[in-house]
Image (cartoon, rainbow, N blue to C red):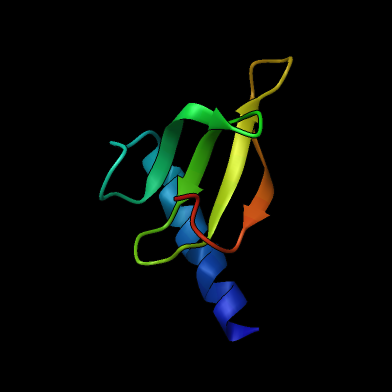
Length: 72
């Protein structure tokens, strides 16, 4: 449980950073090309875990898929 809380805090900090370059940073990255319909990922440095998201019909970026391993 302690690791889950630590990971949540890291994801929260990465989310606050906003958009970041595609390599070497924690934060929101635009996927190019998209992966399974997802256009963005929320990545934390030093971890293969990430959240995938896409912009909904209201223009809101929604992260709704957790991925344990890397995309690459």
